[in-house]
Amino acid sequence: MTDPRMDRSDFIKRGSLVTATLASGLLGTAPPARGAEVQTFKLAFPDNAHTPSTKVAQRFASEVATKTNGRFKVDIFPGGTLGSETNIVAGLQTGTIDFAMHTAGFVESYVPTVGVLDMPFIFKDAAQATRVLAGPVGKQLAADCSARNIVLLGWSQNAWRNVECVDRAIKTPGDLKDVKIRIQAGPVFAAIFEAVGAVPVVMDWPDVYVGLSQKTIDALEVPVPSFVSAKLYEVSKHISLTRHVYNATLFMASKPKLAAMSPADQEVIRRAGAGASAYWLNLMGQADKDAAAFAKHQGVQIIEVDREAFRKAMAPVYDKFKAKFGDLLPKILAETGG
Image (cartoon, rainbow, N blue to C red):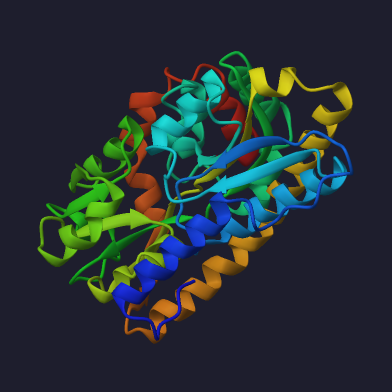
């Protein structure tokens, strides 16, 4: 979470300094054992350096360095410094990026079945999602990732996605009619908001602040921590707690890079990734609450919605995509009672 006392220029300067420090490997590393050859790896994620993702990355880097006696050094690249959201996933497949932390919506471009996790209201709470992803569904998705040169190290969540609006309180599906809302790219996200009569607009994340301030868009749908870290509370004063998408995240490794390691080193990576994912899940739960409290302090209204009405409005989305994900969607619904 950002310091509310900083002005925008200070925020940008500090962000640049932190990013440079992370990338240089000065945080979260251990000195190599005497005489050992050091191997350097890249860990990329799209969130900026002030989000909880950075703490997760540091934890992973520190554990890997410690467990390999400093032979492995993980450099951290936040904020899309190694490429766009989709480029990060492509880099894993080719081995130009070694590790990545990313939401399911962008992984879907390369592993289509992962997109099932972005179906609206598919999970009732984080505990239910954790149980499902620890079972056969999670294992099937991991196998699909492996078939595309990506090794899943662990599941987490990047906080629930909610609707944030500039000048109106969204409480029911009808309140979104004709609202121009910035969405994450993807057919499921477009269908969610088309189902309630909104006008979905795909827009790059760096352009959202200006888009809201100039009324190019009226609203967006992101987790509250992302809303706060980007200082969108300066131009948008309503957060409606739709919790429409769980926003599953994956901690991933490049399969070619992992395969080149010894079995012992592979186990270090797998354990560190699993531990970082569990830590990430707990961290985001608290970060979500803290971000909402901070936004409220900045004059943003936090609005409860008729979630059952929103859930019922999603019937066309399920009709449209039920064939796309094969048996995965019915498997999840059978476990969740959806």
